[in-house]
Length: 125
Image 1 (cartoon, rainbow, N blue to C red):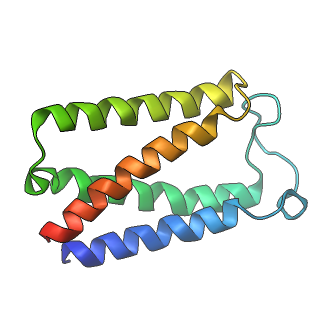
Image 2: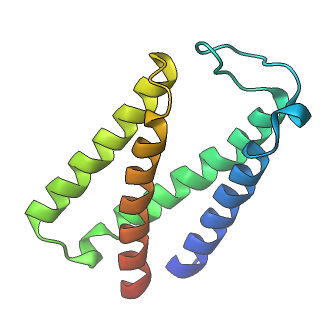
């Protein structure tokens, strides 16, 4: 499958899953699993997660398989990797240690880095 089509399909899965995850709490039902205070997926959340996970992993596969084609200098790659790790760390810490709204900063950082790399892979496809 061509790279651009892979990106579109993976993004469609991620966006559908995010749409389900963004539904109001009144539609979700009870939490099935509890991660921390106020954190845990309902059955509807698990459906969203079931779409986001393969779509996100597929997107990461496409990004990293095309990373050499993007032709970034090693310092830029290090900075992107460090920013990605920081974003994921903030996200995980906010869920398990209840750092309130720090997940917004973490996921924003990860999303910006992914958009930058997707654009590079799209241009070089």
